[in-house]
Image (cartoon, rainbow, N blue to C red; front, side, top):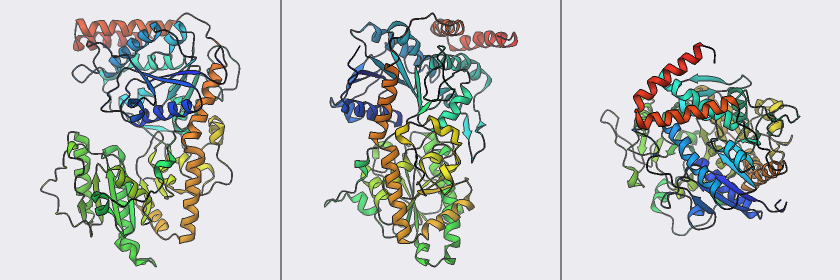
Length: 552
């Protein structure tokens, strides 16, 4: 056995590009490496021109098993998940043939490889579930407000897609159930996991009970994503970039940082801000009439959702009687936004009540988060799995106004004790991130109503300097104690050591349903490359429909 103080750990991640999941994997790997462990990241895709620096400059060891040409990401924009499974099987095959195996595997996003790693490598596996793929793939959204149980909002999948997804969803559940310890990014995700994967039995520490182990049933262990707190410290700069100078203002400012996507519901911030401006004249601070709202986020003119969402927001601002300005484009590679002719002309940057900032730079982001004139972050999405932006705002001492649903209920502290989260659920939170009884407000959690949000904006604007300073300190302390890289890496290390302490895996035969699912996957793969996608969908629909009617 390896020395208990130092383990060989391998992360398996399908696509090592740039994104939230990739940032979490990189940060977790760095944290474990800094603790003395030998860490590598194994992937099917790693583009040196589109990746995090730590995976390119040699800081982290990256092992690439590039899939063959006949395993593309998709075929005519379809079959993404089936090909993703096959690409990971290709990766697993080469990994098992390589010399030497790690002491513990950490897998995230795709669980396909877990049974193979345990069966043929006899190693323990920790699985980090960002969110069930079965819900992401069908477009099913989950709403959770207050103490009410989560409920589906919508499902965009048609009948054929549901039939195609059925074996994939079964495969996801069966393979996920093979993991020794299961982690998630929030209590919200933990509750969704337990609801949609009812066959997976875990103890209160996220350990698998399917092997006959004894223990009280719980759920996946929560390890919150961490952020690099040092990156949010204000650094003096003599040569300020022009795009930062233009954005700087003495006006009271509310900010919204989200991609320009319809699901982010940024229109809520616009409507609430309009109500705030309309009624602020009653306050004792008429200077707030000059307040502005900066809406910043990722934008790509090639993405239809980005274009439609920005145009819809511009129209909403005009309908609400708000003057607006589109900040000069700083990233020409993403394309300049096109403004339709039916939208009223924009105002100057100095006088506009709403400033739209597509593709903000890192320097602009830092200015918005750290400026003494920024009053609060408005986080409009509902049902977010975790949501790192509110944590970034708290790290900068900003109050956060967010919807009372999903991850923000855990990151943001309102007046309500523990944000109305069921106390029983808090038993699954890693002990290093437990909330103390002395926690007080770091923000406001409200239902997604413009009226409720406008009232919260007024409360934020009226904070006294001493109250704002105290809230700022509480927010920074909470971000440091619960959402730092140190807290995340400590939780990951604890989970990995718990898995390693279980000892070598005892080999077993594949379960009947699991074996049947794998046979089905192989038949579908062969059929696609011989008969084509259309015929494959037809015969799979007939087979699945027949077996469903027969009660299988």
